[in-house]
Every structure is written in structure tokens, then in C-alpha cells.
Amino acid sequence: MKDDQTRLWRQLAGLSSLGITLAASIAIGAAIGIALDRWLGTSPWLMILFFIFGVAAGFTNLLKDLKHWGS
Amino acid sequence: MEHHPTVFQIPNFLGAIGIPGAWIPEHIAMAWLVMAILIVVSYLATRQLQAVPGPIQNFMEVVIETFTDLLTQMIGHNGKRYLPLIGTAGLFILVGNLLGAFPGLKPPTANLNTTAALAITIFLSYNYFGIREQGIAAYLRHFCGPILWLAPIMFPIELIGHLARPISLSIRLFGNIFGEESVIAILLSLIWLGIPYVIYLGIMMPLSLFTSFVQAFIFVMLSMVYIAGAVHVEHEEHH
Image (cartoon, rainbow over all chains, first blue to last red; front, top):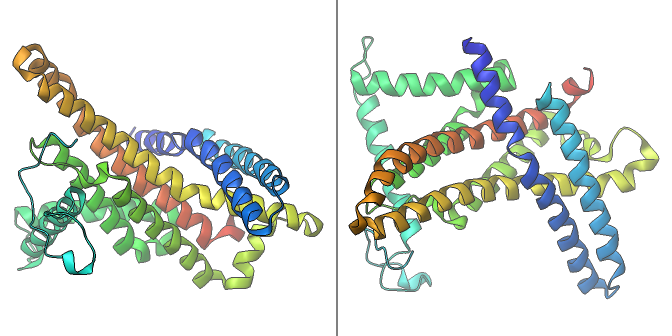
């Protein structure tokens, strides 16, 4: 019972981060892309590329976290 | 909330190094208050260590044991090494959040600067721990994924994934505590209506205590998960 409860709380902690991490990954990807574009003057290509990287990172993390916490 | 000044203010004696205003910013003054509380309690608890502990020592022992147990469960037998970092962050956040329950005090964690400082500390620390345990080359190789020719794609993806961690840590803590604090401030400003008083005592008070504990727990929990992931990645891959 005690162990079950701590596991439940741990899952709550882990799963509560899914949404924010997904959004933050995409935002960070886009931000890195925009910064690189400004630096190299290649607007908008790196922004698009890193936006895609950000989405990929978000979903990779989502799947990893779900595998880790969901079971 | 500008119209809701706190009872605890420190005159600005740091004007010389570029801190503006007549008073030290609220969240910094509150952070110092939390530090003072923690220092005093720790001093009282450890002043005379006894085999049969007194009430304060007993309480602190239970707190430290809880942290140690969690660390051992999450990181493994040498999880105790990270007790100073995790314990400090956890106690600071918990006491800071609980300040919100006292009228006139503001939790320092209701300001993004405080939570960002905490999250960045955790971020730099877990990367440092990972490099210290595995060496920089081995640690960076985990960023490149299992397949070599995919490394140029995997590296930025992993990098972005790691950079998202401190952001999600800091924004979650800040958002929860700031939201709770704002609701309480609004309820207190409507208190002459009578009903909000009941809502405050009956709903917001227990709710804010609950959020305080849960948010501190979540922050500590995720920090431990990040440290565990950085310290033994190989261990995870064998599963």
C-alpha cells in the first residue's frame, strides 16, 4: 500500500511534465533556429529546420517519458 | 501584485551594484527570509546532536531520511551523494511555497527569476554529474543516439530535449505558485463581501498547502530523474 502510493505520486510527478516539455521543446527549437538565422543571415531556413527538430525532440521525449512513467 | 505589499521588506543597500528601487525586490527579500528560516532551523536541530533526539532534531531527521530514501530509490545506492543539492532545493522550494499561506508574505517561488535560478542550477549540476561519472566523451556520445549516421540529426534533437527540461521545471513551479498566489490575493481583496473569507479558509488554504507540497515534490522528483538519467545511461540501455 505504501509502495503503491509512492509509485503513484512518482507517476503523477513524471506525467505532469509531459505537456510543458512538449511545448518547451518546440519553442526552444524555433528560438535556436531564429537565433542561428539572425547570426548567419539564412532566414527562414534554419528556423524551419530547427522547428522540425524541436517537434521531433518534443515527441521523442513524450514517448520516452510515457514508456518510463506510464507502465 | 503591486497593490498588495508584503509586511517584510528590506531597504535597498545594494544600489551600488545596480539594484534599482528603494527596497530590495520582493522575491529576493522573501528568498532571504526562507534562507534565514532554514539556517536557524538547521542550527537549532544540529546544535546539540543527541542519541535520543529532541523535537527539532527528530523532525529534521525525518525530513532528511525522506530525502535519502527517495534518492536511494531513484538513483541507486550512491544516491546519497546528491543529498546536499536535492535536499537544499527541496527544502527551499517547500518552505518558500508555504510562505504563501501566511497573509502578508509572498512565496519567492511565485517569481520566474527564483524558479529559473533553481532550474538552471539543477540543469548545470546534472550535466556536471553526468560528465564526472562517465567522462565528457562518453557523456556526449549518449546525445548522438545508437546509430552513427543518424548522429547529426539525433544530436540537435537530444540537445533541444535537454534544454527543454529547465524551462519546464521553472515554468511549472512558477505557474502553479503564482496562480495560487494571485487567486489568494484576489480573494483577500474581496474579503469585505464575507463569502470569499469562507472560500479562502475552506478551499484555497488547504489547496495552497497541497500545491506547496506537491510542487516541491515534483521538482525534487524530476531533478532526481534527470540526475539518475545522466549518471547511469548505460545502465538504462541494458534493460
